[in-house]
Image (tube, rainbow, N blue to C red; front, top):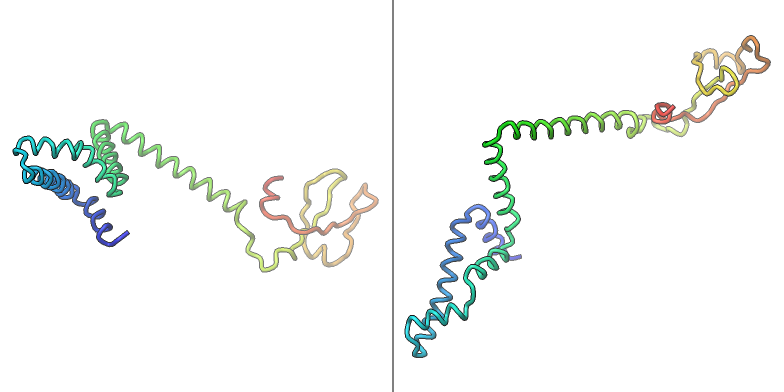
Amino acid sequence: MKLSGLKLRIRAIFKPDTVERELDDELAFHIECETRKLMAAGVNAAEALQHARARFGSIPLAADQCRDERGVDFFETLARDVRFALRTFRRTPLVALTVVSTIALGLGVVTVAFTFFNMFFFRVDAVRNPDELFAVERPTRPGFRGHVPFTWTECESSSSLPIPPGRSRFTIRISPARSRSSLMAQ
């Protein structure tokens, strides 16, 4: 696209009345040139104008084709839609308030949901080497998947903790640490 074409498109967006007037003048100029050519060939003025318009075709159709070639139809349509929406909201302010409130509430809910999921599921733990983390667990009874907390000094002081009453054997299982998301899922 040339710079002159870009300038025309920008003018068409910000000064549509001027561009439309220039388009009408240009179309009239083409018809006038054809009329003069026919009059130079010996046709009277009224017939020359009629033949020139017939050769040129539909003037509104030609104007529409020129507008389509400008490539600013999207912006013109958007501007018309925004003006229509503002007029409608001015006539029915309760509907406008309802629409704006619904959009604001929806955006707020999405923001809260994303913040929650980001905090618990998407965020990576801030640890230098996450593969080297381990969780120390001790089962409370066979088949129980819960965790019983105990201190690191208990684990460090002895390789085996005291055997709880009613148990013959007690083991400490060291497994790779689970992420926050897998702990939340339990």
